[in-house]
Length: 161
Length: 161
Image (cartoon, rainbow over the protein chains, first blue to last red):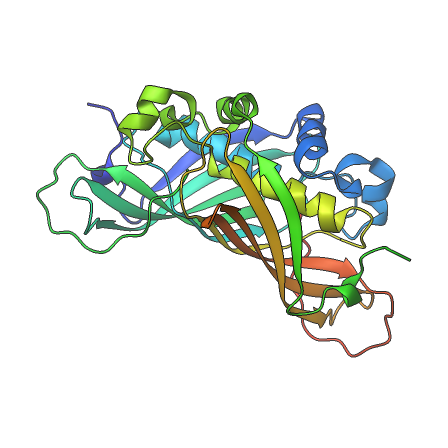
């Protein structure tokens, strides 16, 4: 059985999520729809901003990371969404053509107190351009358990993702 | 002069960001590209999940909120992006056709210590479906100041958004 379940996400585990390349056309289309600020749409406006150039919406960068997480961990897993993030840091601007190496680290894991078959996993995600970390997020994922007969601790509310 | 600058974002100010309706086709297209988990793509998988039905990626909901924030506050403002969020909570699943009322509240504001013309504004954003809060985020925005001759305090790193 290759499905990733709660029991597989043990604290300390680090999972490589591969590389994502920032496509200029997609980056611009995302910004036009969701974050049409001048520095996300226009070269000159980007150069004149503190960001230093035409750069991605932070929500686009986070969404690219999410796709990498789905492809490398969540696809075929027992994931049941997430109540949210404790941190979502845009540490440096991301530019068209950037190649981002994405990674996941398991920080902690506990059985749900209120839902017998669920476990809550605290994780940190990062995206690096070379040595530079450009995105960092800390969040909780809910995963189904293979074995529901173990002790349970507290958990959070059901989320969307 | 109607441009929103740092000086306009005073703690305690609450700004209505209008309503956003969750378009089913757009919700699904977003999920297919960025968050292709079964409960974001398939009715039956949604019903069988703890989320209770086919529902939006939390990143889509956050992106809808961002667009409302741009339309009602950032467009034509002195915004210079954001270093990130201290909280991004997906408090309840969001479904196709949901009408989300979006709001912004200014929590705090301080002049940048290192960048003379910038101010850092701490804000909380929410999206409600009826009385139910489905999305809450707490973040810092960087805004240009009209008057750069006031005392400055500390600030954070430059971000993407």
